[in-house]
Image 1 (spheres, helix red, strand yellow):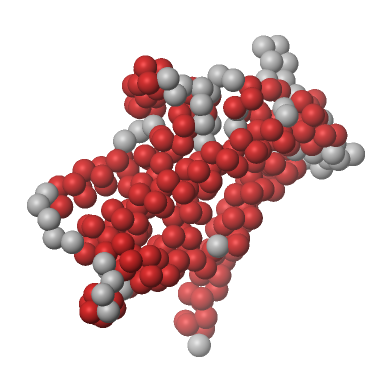
Image 2 (image 1 turned 60 degrees about the horizontal axis):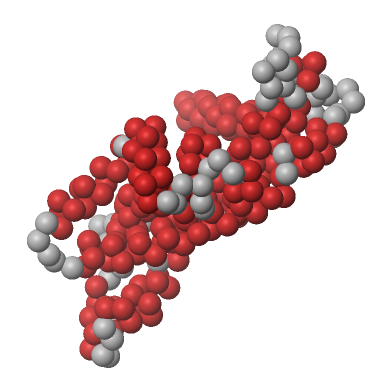
Amino acid sequence: MRTRSLPRLLFVVLMTFLVLAELFPLVWLLNFSLLRSGDFFGSSILKWPNPPMWRNYADAFKGAHITLLFMNSLLVVFLSIGLIIACSIPMGYAFTRMRWKLRGVCFSFIMAGMIVPIYSTLLPNFILFKETGILNSYLSLILPYAAFAIPVSLFIITGFLETIPRALEEAAVMDGLGIPGMIVQIILPLLKPAIATVAVLAFLNCWNEFIMAVTYIDKDTLRTLPFAVVYFMGQYSSNYGAQFAVLAIIAIPSILMYLLFTDQITRGVTAGAVKG
């Protein structure tokens, strides 16, 4: 009895430690967002805000134009997600259900996009966007966001498509459906968990993206939410409390999205792993 309970106890302790380690950055972020700027200097990891500086959030909304940046981020992210899903589903169907030359080569080429560093594409994309006239526009963010997300999305969708019985499509063909009708009426309803997974992962990546947003957008009216941190950075002094308040505001939608779609993410990611 004791030999069986000891590993279980160690497992519970280990899981508890991992949960606390995962939650600590959020606690730390919220804690620092309620401190005065002068309270940041010291050796303590966490400090009790006395009193809590809720004004940091008011300064964030007032000084960084949070509402405008939030709407810009919302527009860019949802258009990017729409483009990612619109490209990934037909591509996934073509790679899993159709037989054509160079299929394996093309799939491997697209999957190689997962290991391309973002920083290596900044300068080429900047020159390309400038030459084509889309620099300083929403399109200069939507296109690279979609390009970097499509390999992962395609990987998830192809894995999920492999779990769908081909007999359903054969029956649909006998009923007279073509490929577009089959994708819309048969495949899309079955792909809901994978689509939700792709959408949430794309949302998390695009919503928190900073380096491309700073490089390709130079107009204040087109800035996205992560840029709000820069408004409180100065050469000789910075409003650290407002910066952490901005970071907390940026993190809230991501946390809500993850909590709302946790089950769909698990089903979408593990669908390909349990096949066979």
